[in-house]
Image 1 (cartoon, rainbow, N blue to C red):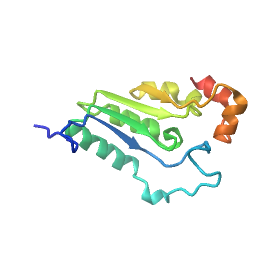
Image 2 (tube, rainbow, N blue to C red):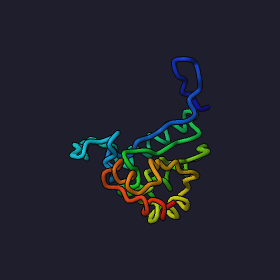
Image 3 (tube, helix red, strand yellow):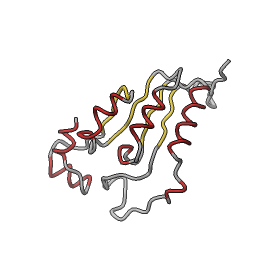
Length: 146
């Protein structure tokens, strides 16, 4: 028998977000300082700890997990982590939020690893505005990935 996660209002929790990194390859004006200080790597959960957390969430009634960041696609080993999490019995859906900067490289491997959907944060379709908002982003690279 699985136990259920319940919030303070008595609602069953069946969806969680797990941040896999605080790092990002953009420096969006609304999100990060240009010269950002990140957590020391030893303070960030290992891939094994993230997978173990996902297993515990699913064992307690979670059906959907969203991987987030920072930018999850800058995390070394992200595809293998997705493969391992998507294989957890009882998980209905593994999804991810991304800025899209790495999708030209990772779209197919993520699909093959069991990621069902992506939420892509896309601030503007105007290249100059996109660059101004992200400070470093290349809209054309994101569009290629999409």
